[in-house]
Every structure is written in C-alpha cells, then in structure tokens.
Image (cartoon, rainbow, N blue to C red; front, side, top):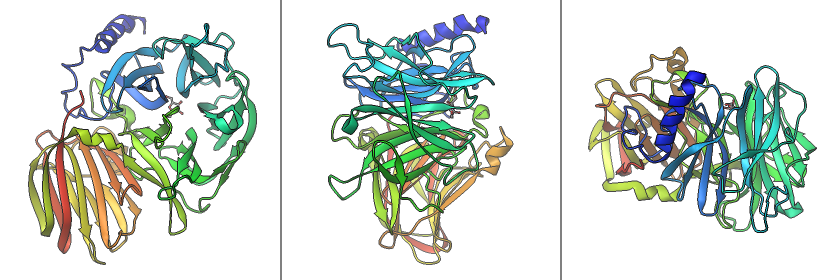
Length: 497
Ligand code: FRU
C-alpha cells in the first residue's frame, strides 16, 4: 500500500487541478454522467448544496480500480451536470475505512464547530468501518466550504458495538428544530431513526422493518419529504433504501419520531427496475422551492468489481427530480431526469406517426443519445427500440403488451464475458399500463450506461452495457406486425468533460 501512495496521490492531484483532458475519451467512458477520473467508485455520499455548489462525495479507493481503502472522493458542480474534481475529502485512516454517509450544513452552529461568528460548518456523518470488527457513526467538519475536513476528536458519536451498523443519512427536521438520522442494521433488515440537537449525541426514536424486499442485507437508507404531483402544497414522506442488490421505497408519513408506511405491504416498489441502480440518496439543503433531487450508483455488487472499464470504475446516475403520485390507489415515486440535462442536446431528429413493420433503422449513429418515443399499443404489441445496434448485437428496450411488461434486454449488447452473473442478469421487466393507449419512453444512452424513464417517470430502469465502439445504430422494432410510433425524437448529446 505504501508504494502505491505516492504515484496514486500525485496522479489524483494532477487530475484535481484540471488535467483531465487526456482522460474521458476511453472506450466505454460515459460522456454526460459523473465518473471519477481514475480508480474505483461506489455509493454517492454526502450530497449537499451549499453556497451555490452541489457537492458530490463518493465511496472511493484512492489506490486502485477495485473496492478497497474506502475513503470519500469529492467533486463539485454549479449545475449538477458539469463537475470539477477535487482532492480526496476524507481519507481512510490506519485500520478504519470511511464508509457511506451524509453531509449537512450546520447553519445554526448546533455542533459548536464554528470558530468565529458567521462561520457555517459543514458536517459529514459517516460510518467508520473496522473490517470484521466494528461499524460506528463518526463525524468530521469543514470550515472552508468542504475543501478540508477535520475528524471530530470525540468520535464515535453513535456506537452500538456492532459489526454491521451503517450508512447514516442525516437531515434537519425544521418543525422540531432537530437533526434526524436514518441508519441501517443490515443483517436485521431494519432502518433505525435517531434524533440529535447537536450532531454529537443521538437518541433512538423508532425503527422500521423488516418489510418489503428482505432477501438481501439492507443498506443506505434515506427518509425525505416529497411533494405530491398535481396537489400544490401537499407532501408525503418516503423511506428509501438498498436491499442488496436493488433498491426499494415506502411512501407514508413521518411525525418527527416514527415513519408510518402507507404503501401496499405485499408489494415491492423500486425506484429503479433495472439491474444497475443502488445506494441512491437525496441532496440535503436544496434552496426552497426545489424538488427533491437524488443520485444513485449505476452498478450492481454481483459483478461491480469486474466490469471492463479502465482506468476508472462506475458512474453515477443522472440527477433525478422526485415527486409522488397516487395512481390506481398506490403511491408511486415519480422520477424525472434533471430538467437542465436538456442543455446538452444537440441537433434534433424527429419522426411523427412513423409506421414500422418488423424493424426500421433510423439514420442516426451514436452511443451518446437522448430519445423520446411514444407509441400506441394494442393487445398484441411487442415493440420498442434497439440501441448500440451493430454486428455484435444491440440492447433492446421494449413493451410487451401481451404480458403488460416494460423490459430491457442486454443479453446481446456486447461484452458479457467478464463475470458469469452479468449475463445471467441480462433481462429485466416490470408491469406498466399504457397511458391513453400509449407507452412513453424517455431514454438516455451514454456509451456504457442506459437510463430509461417510462410513462412520465412512473418507472425507471438503469443498466450497464459494454458494446463495441462501432455498434452505434438505432432501430425501431415491432415484433407482432405493424406499429405506429406517434413521436420519435432523438438528440446527440454534448460531452460534459
Ligand atoms: C453500499 C455499501 C454501504 C457501505 C459502502 C462501502 O454499496 O456496501 O453499505 O457503507 O458500500 O463501500
């Protein structure tokens, strides 16, 4: 580890001061999603808005391209689209890794960390991980807007003496002027809620679970208030977390102490029904009037360490704006890509009422695209779009009206050889109903990432794919005869790097 320290550190410094231009041109490198310049990344951590900057901290290995030496990497953005890499924020220390957590702006200096009047501390709350021994919650603070961090000298602030107890998400509960922490007991499959007046002493308030998906361990919880779509002024609360290797959410209410679930107990609701969406959390401290914004890790622990990208591994999803809506008596999370992503659109191609029998190749060649597609379905329809179409195959996004399923299928989309479970996890589907007889797809393809928002954000699906660079065709298909594609729009997208 010592040997690696110097070159790794120097390289990171070079990248941090802006010499990233020779990077970001590699095979599979996303053009408009966040990726670290080099090395391994997993969960987003400490998402927080402060003084005009969106901070993105993330689980990062400063020493290599596989999971290990977990520390907090750091980037900032003024618009959530274009990112500036910053030096490592919170490094691993001796035998203690810095696991996932959150970040708050302590405007009223409840922590007492401010050293002079008017100074506003940022406080990071994270899990200190000692392999096979213990996980406890620690804090660190910054008095220079997140540029440097000082570990609190009386850590831990919350310790149950357990081996698995992690991923604190803290937010300010204004109604009762207190901090609230959601944190998981992964093995017990419980989310615990604690409160604190000063971020240093924490009291247990309640716990939630097991519930919904209890097959895997539970990780990365978040509890947040969210507007109800179409009902101005009305809000609900969502408890979202990651039962490995996917995510789930519950919609209900929070009274300052307990989360009360109103989602159907027998059903599992996922923020994303694809293979690659995990550990998503929300931004803290957004300006008043903003919709809640989340970001997730576009990967899956089954094969994450082995994906064929170098010198970096893993990407974050596009930032998503969130609302909830009651549809057919069920609370559904509505997620839309950040509106501002539209700024990256280049020239538009559009087709209206295009009839497709079998398949139709469109005159577009790119692996960096946004598409909007609306098509009318009947009871026999199996139709949609194939991307990265080339001699080695394609990825298919389709709707199967016979079974009422939206699906993505990446089994023929390029390299699947790097891990046996990647090819096993190649087809993902979920039930959706047409809206006024139509299926609406909003798709982002970014080299090795695909994000699909269907029916105005009622369903999302994210997946990684590793196609050959020359496989860049776009094809509409209608497997059960003729289909009318009412609207097809396509934009090539600008790179943000
Ligand atoms: C989720 C997770 C967290 C943990 C972190 C370690 O992906 O396993 O529970 O804090 O990653 O890197």
